[in-house]
Each structure stands twice: as C-alpha cells, then as structure tokens.
Length: 299
Length: 274
Image (tube, rainbow over all chains, first blue to last red):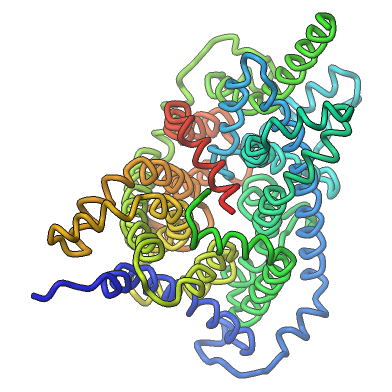
C-alpha cells in the first residue's frame, strides 16, 4: 500500500466533517428555503404545490408573526444590552487585585452550567403567584402590597423572561470581557496615570476602546443566540399569557409540529435565517477576524 | 492613602457579596426547596421545618429519572467522543496540511456555529425519520455532533498551529506516514486542549433541549425533556421538580467546580480567539 501524501491525508481528515455539514446543515438550509415556496400541510397529505412567494405574502399580513417578531426583538435588545453592561461591571470587579476574586470566577460558572430548561423552572417557582419567594421578598420590603401573578400579565411575564436570561448569561459575558481585560498591558495604564488621567477617564478612553474587538464578538454571538430564544419560554410561560411571550422560534415550532404546516413554517424559519444573516453582516469584521485567526496560530 | 484603600476594599467586598448573592440565590433556593415538605413550600417558610429526602425519592419513582439520566449520559458521551475525533482531524487538516479551500471551509464552520437550529429542524426531522432514527440514541448523537463539531474545530485549530512543525517533520524523516505522525506526535500534544473542549461539548449536549424534544419525544428522552414531564395541567409538584432539577444539575456543577480553571480558560479563549 502506498503511503498518502500530506495533502491527501488532509483531505481525508476533512472528509467526514464535510459530509456531516453537507447532509445535516447545508442541505437542510436549502431544503427549508425551497419548501417555503410550497403549500405543504400534513392535513392535506404529502402533496406539495408550488405557490411562489405566497407564504411570505401571508406572513406579512399575519399579526401573530409580527407579535412574535416584536417580542423576539424586544427580548434580544434588552437582554444583550443589559448583559453587556453588567458583564463590563462584573469583569472589572473580577479583575481587581483583591483576595477572593477567585470565588467570584467560580460563582460565575454556575448559571452558565445550568441547563436553560432548569433555570426556567427555577424562575417559574421563584415568581409563583402563591408561594414564590420573589413576591415574598418584595412584600417584606414593602415594594408590593400583595402577591402579583407575574406570569399572567403581558409586561411582567416578558420582564421575568428577560431577567432570567440576564441572570443566566450576564456572568458568561463577564468572563469574555475579563479575558479581554487581561490582554491589556498594565504599562498602558501606568502611562495614562502619569499623564494625569483619572480612573474614569482611563476607563472610557483606554479600557473601552481596547475592549472593542472582544465586545463586538460577544455582542454578535449574544444577538444571534438571544434571537433564537425558545427553551426558557417553554419552561416559564409557554408563550402566554395569550401570545405575549411567543418568540419567533416558538411560533415556527408550533407552525411545524402542532399545526403541521410545513410550507408556512419553512417561510418563518427562512425569515429567522434572513435576520441572522443581517446580524452577521453587521459584524463582518468580527467574522473575518475569526476566520483569519483560524488560519494563523494564536499570538 | 490608607483610608482610600479601606474604602476601596469595602466597596469591592460589598459589590462582590451583592453579585454572589444575586447569582447564587436561585441555585441555593432550588437546593433548599428540594429538601422541603410540600406544606413548608405552601406555607412560605424560608427554611424547612423538617428536612426531607422525600422529593428525591419521588423524583425517581414518579418519572423514570434514572433512564433520563442514562440516556443523556450515553448521548452526551458518544456525541462528545465523535465530535472530538472528527473535529481534531478537521482542525489538523486546516492547521497542518497544504490542502486547498481552507477559507471557504472556515467560513462554513463559522456559519454553522451561528446557524439557528430552527432554520434546519424540519429537514433534519425528515432525514432522521427517513433513516429510521427517531426516538433513538443515534439520531440525537448525530445532530449534537453537528453543533459541537464547530466548537471543537474553532477551539483546536490554534492549538495545532502551536505544535512545532519540526516534531512532525522529524517523525516523517524517520519514515512515518502523515497518518502515523498525526497519531503519534500530534494527538498526544493535543491532550489538554481536547480535554477542555470535550468538557465544554459535553455540557452543551447535556443541556440541549430543542432537538431532544423534536427527535426523541416518546422514547430515549433526555434529562432536559424529562424535566418538563413532571408538570401536569393542574398540579406542579414543586418539591419534586426542584429535586429532579438538582439531580440533573449536580453532575455538571461538580464537573465545573473540579475543573473550573480549565473551563474558565476554555471559555475565555473562545471569546478572544481573534
């Protein structure tokens, strides 16, 4: 048997991964886009009828779609902004030279490691309208008079979902920021201090600009993963009250698997793909940097 | 100056305590309530009037929690191993061999790591059904491999860049084929990196919900899908749910606490890998 050349061996190593990507990612993406152009419902049997862009016309007249889009955008915006701000503060704290900061870094890992469905149930229990500790604390502090049914009202149900996501993800963001903070050379701060810059000035004109690449990466990944929110909603509100907390992913799931409407569901899924592409295009610098990094060794 | 230091110290610890309480409380509350009798939960007593393990017994007897755990363990273990093997091979090809098409391949890896699962879930359901793998271990293993492969490739490629080329070249001069050089020189050097990213992948698969729900709704349920099974329309056995949740989380938290340095390092490297 002839031994392989390096190049041949490289292609051989790549092949299984490429196969998996081809069958389970690339083909499905195009299949979804294609199906979005068909009328295809389980109730009417396996026949698919080509209807062009009709599913999309239907989508733009569908108030439930706009409701889901609105909630998803609201959720994405509020969670990502708050998580980045909290992440910045918390990372700064973890980077200070005090005893016990190691403990902080461990605590940060707990919400990250807990499955989303579990954290959803934890929060559901804490905001329960009869025996939720959240109500109990607020009542003891005199902030509310009587226990509130947090998950039965539109605004408060949305707020609880946003809070639970922030609780779970802000600590993780702070780790990413901390990694960025640690790459900033201390000498820069010393130089700035000699030039007479105070701590606040140093933070805004030195730390923040230097953190920009790390923050951009974090924001890109957080925007996309917040936009696909689903699991935490299943645990907490199941989309209710009414459709107040139904996200785009949840509406798509229900269109597929509850209503059996694969044509329209594919149009909704394609819309999610479209939004994801727009977000990715806003961050082409980050993506290009990552891809160049993949071809180079880490400095 | 001394006064200022004390002020800083006090501020730091106040903030630190505040953060630890906020982050830790929900988890603490979950554990505490898993040991409460139902009447204590209903009566809103903070600490149990009497500690009980009843909820833990019920967690195992009212639903097949043990088999949920077993299923999740099998799926996460095999999917982790497969993505480590395939991922380190692909990372090797990118970092160490003169193949063409590295940039398109990396763009593909990046796109898949950003791809929302909902975009591909319906075709994947059809494929897995056509393969006869609904409600099986294999179906979920394959799908989880897809999403952890991208993580493994991103994580290991820089590691492989860092392995000195001379080591491999020396082996090849001694007459080893590229495959032998890979298995004898590169794989042992990859050890620590593979271990770290393996843990990250395992945790990601253990926590996965969407595909577990869609592909295995009847048999081979995973822990995340199983937890939802404790709910019924008019009754929430909160104590039991909290006990089941503790059991699901404990393996992960133990892993995280033992290996915290590696995990933190791994997560941070994932973030700044420019």
